[in-house]
Amino acid sequence: MKKLNVMVIGAHPDDCDIKAGGTALKYLAAGHRVMFLSMTDGSMGHHLTPGVEMAARRFGEIRAVTELTGIEYKMLNIPDGSLTADLMYREMLMREIRVFKPDLIITHRPNDYHPDHRNTGQLVMDCSYLIIVPGVVPDVPPPRQAPCIFYMSDNFTFPGPFAPHTAIGIDEVLEAKMAILDCHVSQVYEWLPWADNYPGKVPLGEDKKSRLEWLAGIYGADDARAAELYRNALVEWYGEKGRDVRHCEAFALCEYGRQTDREGLHELFPF
Image: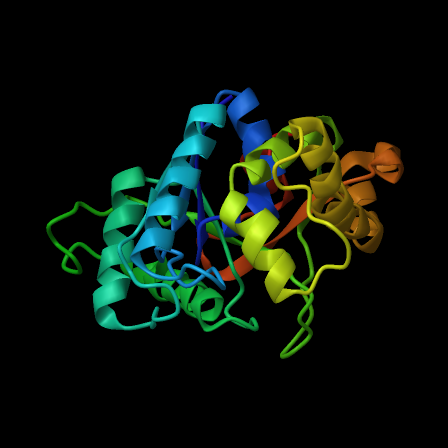
């Protein structure tokens, strides 16, 4: 089996982990290489301490993910909330893609509530063909073929709802995924509960078992809802075993970038 380079590109530290962390762990377990790239420094993702201090905290959090899992994690020095789909950031992203040489990229759809998410998706789309053009960003050699690009799942319906080409069961790595999310203390225990007005007590400071159980009740529940929503895709992917999958992450092939057939999909998602 060919060893794959898998690149997940999110707008902020933790975007990749939430939407593709379980799948990333399965790639690692199979001996593939995984990079999470955050397009911004996450510095605005806090209600009490935004700015340089928060960017430093978030850098420490992604380092913790790397130490825990072996996922390569990089955070670009672009201020949170200011990402635009312009030429400077496109060329910056193109260099990152060319250096890593991914076989597949997973990213946001370019329709989303957050401008950083939208522009991340748009930048990946804008790189999708130019990545192979030698005269564009000539200081980094282009690959001989473009990577396949996949969208992470979302709940948005305009201009069209997310429609997966594959749904990956993550039951066996769900606890390990929650451990990844546990590294993002500033987000999962502080900012997001405040921003989304979670009811009840957040278990920050309690024992790790309690924290992981609480995370499973939030993020594991999202992955459980995905399994029900994308049940047909799970059955198509796994056969009748797909009916027993309780948690999943789903991905849709982008029309840009390298295209592939069903056999190729199974080579890119070999589990």
